[in-house]
Length: 474
Image (cartoon, rainbow, N blue to C red; front, side, top):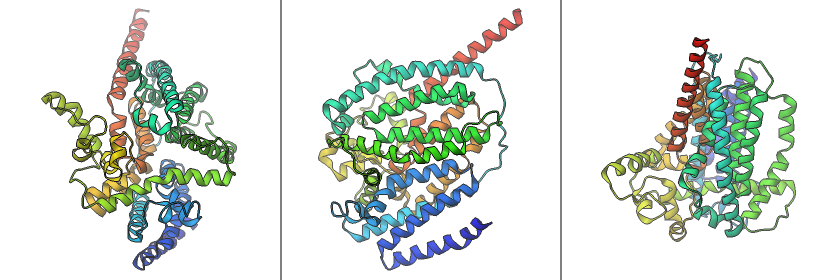
């Protein structure tokens, strides 16, 4: 009741305040309102707990990748004299104001989208998935071992070349078939989890998935480690509150412990950041480690500023659905027509003629570095705004809010194959503030993922048939 009153009075007041500060162009006050807004949304999301766990986790990545630098630099003053306004690459107040407006609209309609819910029975469909669980378990183990070999190569490349050079030029020396099979590790893992194994059975595989994240972290890829942790949190809460209560997956003490070790988490991430930049292993105070983490991860806000700055000169391409468009162009159309494929690597043709915004905006920002293999990333907000202006921003965030709010409800009715795909989508979606609007679809349905689903299905089906025939003979 209290939270309902707060929502009715407090949120409209924040909207009015933001609109007022926008009119008088007080970007500092706008940033404060934005911070209050996202914190308020995060707190009130727990009134719909645990349905809103996916939404709450998305708010964390939204803050980390898009608001973090604005807050630690613009409000807390961290490294204020080293960069432009609010830690961005810009000194033009009008660009900063427009960036804050894009973030405000996105947050507001994300929250409104989370109020749209579907009515589905929370009770899980109980079926015997033993064959699927068995096959997916062993395919995960095989692909995990191969994945480790690939990651070891990444680590060696980072140690010898430096993170940025290795990141832009890494190509595994392993045979293509080995690399292909190694990319099946995540979908097979999530299909296994989708079979709803007992906690005792699932934990060893969860630990292996964390090991994969740690190896990614060792190679300098902090975001991959962070996303692995986030998706596991999402799964653990799903099992705790939407299974049949056969066992306890997480306790309040464990939640408090997780909160308490966050400072250590930030220190480790800060150390990795230092190593990436070629700095020493020495770390600052915990508070500085936290500030440095959000400062470095929050660089994606610059993508919004550059989108506003270059909007009139950017190619008239669709970027929001770019991953889907390029998937059909490269995998189907060009294969059938034998057309030359320039959607490989980083070149001028791909930047100007392709549909991936990360390539186009990187070329506009830093053409020389882009052609050498370095990129700036993207953001779903930038793509929606570039393609469809404010109406696209509104509809896209409404969809995200709706999907996140109902994620648990969707997967309760799905079999392990679709559960696995949905969990993979959720992991990719958490990266949307730094990625494409539809990348979560294409990345989850790539050729290795589809192949893995088919193999698991055929092998599980065969095992089940063999088992049934044995029973008949007996």
